[in-house]
Length: 121
Image: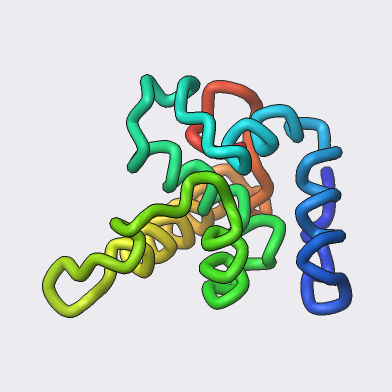
């Protein structure tokens, strides 16, 4: 089992490189570039998948997830669009974090990404 990275101790660039070079890094690289093809070109599904991967790599830190997502090829105006009192990006991050912890609680893992077929990287 891969341990959660110590995100606070590494730069954003190093964190991104670690994610790109991980066992499932190919999927992360595609999402990072903005490739939504694995999600039937559904940008919202791809956003959530990248946020779930970033949730792992950032140790669940929502500010880090947001900062890194904004650097990705998936970033678009919708990220800051408000839905009620909350922006789409904040809702997506919240959903990713809930799913991450729900997955960990259901299968005894610590929130690391699952094998291919799961909605995360």
